[in-house]
Image 1 (cartoon, rainbow, N blue to C red):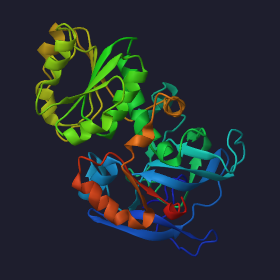
Image 2 (image 1 turned 135 degrees about the horizontal axis):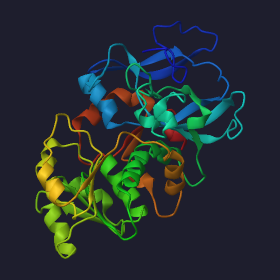
Image 3 (image 1 turned 90 degrees about the vertical axis):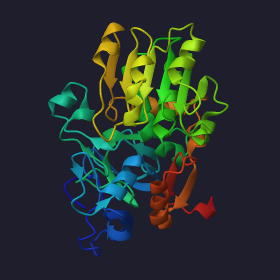
Length: 371
């Protein structure tokens, strides 16, 4: 791990007998090997920072990918790293100048910290700042530790309506919010989502609440589609039995959806996805294929399709919190199971299995038996 940023725990290689004592953290030592280590606590918050006792942390697909492969694109694990970037907890101390948070506040945290002086940040696109420090992305540690220190500017109070488990789901929900925002949805639009994993579901819910009258969600696994049963406005499409584009065109007089979101990251979906959007519609690329995919320029041009891409999120986190706290969104139903942090190794092994019935696995530092 690295001590290059004050927002995460220090390295296990450091002296655990520091004045602040030691704490537990889930550490990826190398591909295929996770340990629970005693590491030094992060210390007191500086100006504009808050110290947070972590409660719940979700296991993201990227965490699992680092566990199984040790790299995502150019981000390569070269030293032990604390995992986790989907977190919620309780503020236990605030630094100088922090006025909107106080000890005892329940919070969730936006895990990417840009350089506020960078051009990307000044342009309002801080998510693409090359200098961004993102939890659990080499060389920066994540939040699967008992405590973290984090900028208050990227720490958000949880309304009473949201549990810690739901607070930890705000991070993937923010990805869906970014996707819906990039689509520029208009009231009554029809949307379609390819992929019914966590990000696909979060995107569908965001699109539905962003103006879409209904959202078709396709997947090859009926177990995943069963997760959205009963949500008004979401229509499951079993991709093993019917074509998404044909289904939506059938229901729209041959026109198709105004917005299509590719949320599976499967390279194979690009063979037919250019036929799905309605003329003048938009394709929003949310999932990241593991290899380059082909772009059918002609099909996109003759129907004047617009193409948008999503990399994490920017300026949507508070909106995600507010929307998730409303009556129209129930993020808690997508938490498959929460485990004590002591079971982290087994939980990551399970995550690597890719069970279709697992939407979101979470770890908690709280006493589950105590309720």
